Amino acid sequence: MKAAMLFSAVALMVLPIFVTARVRARLKFSRSLVALGAASFVLSQVVHVPLLVKLQPGLLRPFWLAAAVLGLLAGLCEELTRYLALRALKKTDVADGVGFGLGHGGVEAFLLGLVIFLALVFRLPVASPTLSSVALQAQLPGWVPQAVLPVAERAMVLTLHVAFTLLVQQSVRARRLRWLALAVLAHGLVDAAVLYLFVNVGPLSAEAALGLATLTAVPIIQHFLAHRDPPQG
Image 1: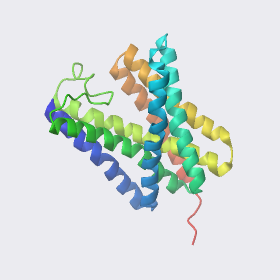
Image 2: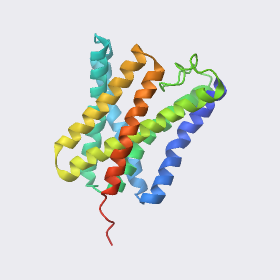
Image 3: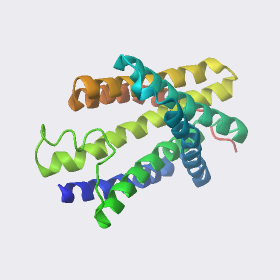
């Protein structure tokens, strides 16, 4: 188990760096956009975490209501932070949006990997904060599934973050808040559905829902890239 978790920890830290480098080689966005996207995630949690502590929406019943409120809070905090940052930066090129989204979702994956790695190094009690790892051990025994599934989960979440960012960026570009509302609702719906299924049906169904959401996100990203303004100069 520890070997699998160590692999996952290192892979979670390497994943966003590798993906960002590969995508940046094609789209040529600035490293500063990635850093700003990462900063936006941290800032969103400065608001999100105290709200969770204060409101304790996880205690609501029935549980579908708790899942809906938790999902909506995540969507509001993260997408509003993205919107304010992109509006202030006046970054409307799709490539910049992709870089920003990779930074936002990438730092989350990196920090999850770092937490697991430090817990293993210092022999602290470790419970991986990904959906798939601990909960799926009984259903999918073996080193490879336990090591790979958390990384696959974060890759899907990273893709979703890019899609959500492009929706928010469209709101800035078109000066239409309906795109921001769509991003908030989409983010909230995905989080709520995954959480509800995880608790009430099982981890495999939650991962399947996450995979379905990712399949929806890919054409959104492709659409915005296909309609990208030609580079100036």
